[in-house]
Image (cartoon, rainbow, N blue to C red; front, side, top):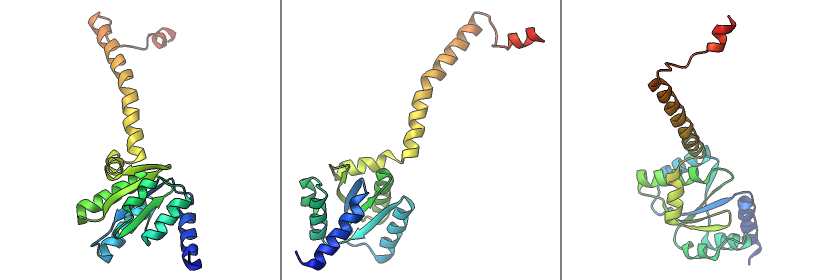
Length: 173
């Protein structure tokens, strides 16, 4: 490989070094304004959007030991999305841009060394952010406790116990 090309590939490998994910998207037809809008939105979720030659992405993915399935999507105009944090937020930005501009199109991705096809990447976009998932999980975990508390309160009320009061405090006064 040409020494200049090796430098570019090494820089790409270095950028991908701390990234737990890499998404490949087809950016054909994006205007510069649309491209910059997507870049700005991705920066807000700590992700980057880079255009580079498919051969460089191929060499970098081989250096990173990414799954070989990624190679089939290295055709046409390909951009790389990667970051160090929330893959779901980055995938959502691409998905929203696709709905807004009908571009870019998700090709595939790699998450923690596992190949993801376009549907799986779209599934990550549909999941939502980490904060939303944690809020949903908290709601699921709190639901049984709330149901038990309501059932106990209903039973006490049915048995004529009335509302729960702080009797020990009244006795102490």
